[in-house]
Amino acid sequence: MQQLSRRKLLAAGPVLVAASRMARAQAYPSRPITMIVPFAPGGLTDVLGRVLAAGMQTVLGQSVLVENVGGAGGSIGTGRVARAVPDGYTVVLGIWNTHVANGLTYKLDYDVVQDFAPVVLCAEAPLVLLAKKSAPANDLRGYIAWLKANPGKASLGTVGVGSPPHLLGILMQKQIGARFTFVPYRGAGPLAQDIVAGQIDMTFANTATSLPFVRAGSAKAFGVTSLKRIAAAPDIPTMDEEGLTGFSFSLWAALFAPRQTPRDIIDRLNTAAVKALHDPSAAHKLEAQGFAIPSPDRQTPEALGAYQKSEIEKWWPIIRAAGITPQ
Image: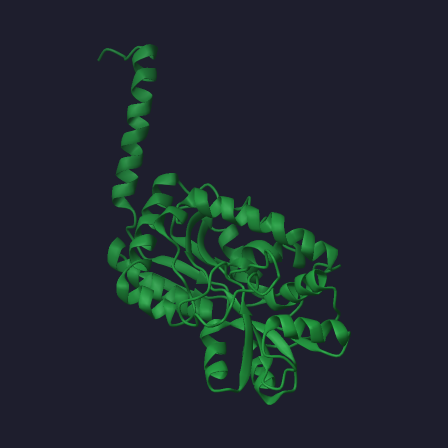
């Protein structure tokens, strides 16, 4: 048999690589995929994960199994995926905490950017500044005036150091030039109960859990952290509208794979996730939980990577300035 010349081998190289990638993409997935949700069952991330998994497995023709691996602010489950084989069969549903804040607030044995391959931005959830019903104001401008006139008298509940309510509280103090006390809670449930009971003055909370209290007259909503007013409560102004310029935040969730996962597999996962999230039934379920589904142009792997880096550039200086040390 006559051997191929070096020139012919080199010319055939790109074709062979492309054929190999095509074959791999057609074969993937050939077995169930595990989606790590790095928090306990029942929370918002878990709800999103199960809706997403159900839709993706319909598109992919393979089971997508949700595995809850909680602990250490989501870093235990996230770290497992960082160390997983990059074959597309283990992914993590990360959130703002796990892929932005945890990079500074926890001592990690992985890098929140370098050790992951972005797949897709799944959903975003703005927060609402929720206050007890006896708060001495009926709008945010009035409440800010009271906070400035009464330094140190108000309390803001958080769900831990470095959590979104904590960091938003720090940002708020910086912007309005007022001081208030931070009170940590073990979870959002007990914190909301104390807001309703009037035991604590305010917090930043998920809109889905907050709005029922507001509509029942058990609490006040002074503003949402979204860029635009939310459809579920168009009467609540944005923080920006009330004078806190640039005060925006979304508790986003996104799918990440281990670094070096082949691009064709990333693309396959991305396509399945986008189709699942834009299914009307899935979108309705997630909107009921306070999530908004990004437009498709924001759901490419490149868009997610750029978004994560921009969030790190915004929030890491705030975390450092607050003197928060890794746990």
